[in-house]
Amino acid sequence: MDSPSRSSVIIIGAGISGLSAAKVLAENGIEDVVILEASDRIGGRIRKENFVGVSVELGAGWIAGVGGKESNPVWELANQSGLRTCFSDYSNARYNIYDRSGKIFPSGVAADSYKKAVDSAIMKLRSLEANHVGEVIEPPCLPKTPIELAIDFILHDFEMAEVEPISTYVDFGEREFLVADERGYEYLLYKMAEDFLFTSEGKVLDTRLKLNKVVREIQHSRNGVIVKTEDGCVYEANYVVLSASIGVLQSDLISFRPPLPRWKTEAIEKCDVMVYTKIFLKFPYKFWPCGPEKEFFIYAHERRGYYTFWQHMENAYPGSNILVVTLTNGESKRVEAQSDEETLKEAMEVLRDMFGPNIPNATDILVPRWWNNRFQRGSYSNYPIISNNQVVHDIKAPVGRIFFTGEHTSERFNGYVHGGYLSGEYKSS
Ligand SMILES: Cc1cc2nc3c(=O)[nH]c(=O)nc-3n(C[C@H](O)[C@H](O)[C@H](O)COP(=O)(O)OP(=O)(O)OC[C@H]3O[C@@H](n4cnc5c(N)ncnc54)[C@H](O)[C@@H]3O)c2cc1C
Image (tube, rainbow, N blue to C red; front, top):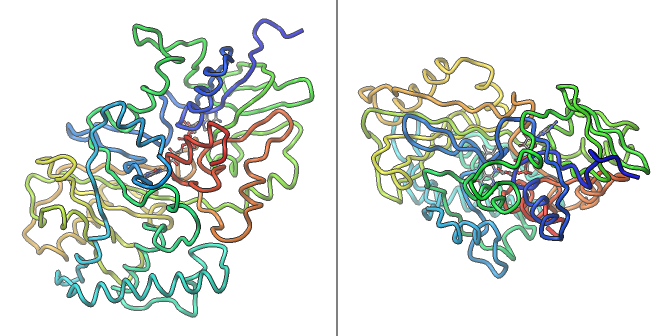
């Protein structure tokens, strides 16, 4: 017989996928579920932070995949919850590409280079059946000029969707909306969980959600699972749903007894982790061009991905005087390792290249560190996109009583919030 402290299911992680799994279990009458979350909050990679009085999204910012044949559950939830969003189209960025002397490339030149890069990537991807978007641009077709490098960066590191010939945007739509709500994207998670995680007074049901519980070991057998946390607590259950990110699975944070089978660990190793960093800069006044068509702009530098992609927050937060610059992978890791003062200095040099020497210094900077966060180890999964569906299948497949969920287990929408949501429902995602 089960001991009294044994629950039906332990869910590891209180991000969108973990909470979505908890919701489905609750809806199916399985109430004795315990969620163990390593950090002191719910949300995971959906995370708002107050930056000089403005609620900014350090993690997910867009609700992607809107307006298609299938309805996106996250978009539905946003509408039901009255979350404020604004339409945001970064394809305009290609018409605002600055060179190092502050000149904007003529729109015809930029559009042509962009189209050529997309067409050639799609063609190569189809003919070579490359496994990763990244492979398509490896030598011998390595771009050389700063504008080519900038476009290459945007295409492959930022708008991967442009060159994804898979179904990502077929059923769900192509439109994206930026969350622009003081309550943050994470408000959706609170709304989603209100029936099973909170009392009617809004207090957390601490029998169900346990924060600051870093899972370090999962023992599993035919009889059930035993989960041990860093603070020495032990939890027992019939099943575990593990929603930690692919980066965490690749790290040694959680050990398994017995170890996971080889097919599983090999699949986990095969999935790349993307690091994506939004750096926020606050200015005393605006010096950049405004208007929706100028919301995004690009800096073309001979170093790929060097402070390339910029966005002003005037559409989302009018009057905030905040700029956001996005870095990825190597540049993200480099910046995470240096002081924020160094990053500020670099960013200001880039802005002065684009807008001249007289612009004011930023008064504040916020640099999220997703790579060095041991509960994340990156921003999202970056899968083989054409072939090898077996990899995602294996990553998702249960091992005995351990079930795996999270955006990285979504076959169609990995990397996205709606991928996380659907994966938690454990339906076709
Ligand atoms: C910078 C950035 C920008 C993004 N932009 C977008 C976007 O615009 N649109 C979009 O759709 N998606 C975006 N994403 C991706 C999106 O945020 C994720 O796909 C989604 O939130 C993942 O949810 P999840 O539940 O799978 O994982 P997570 O949110 O990571 O949840 C997993 C939880 O597990 C916890 N955990 C980890 N290890 C342990 C442990 N050992 N013990 C206990 N708990 C543990 C973590 O603390 C975390 O709370 C972005 C992500 C980042 C980082």
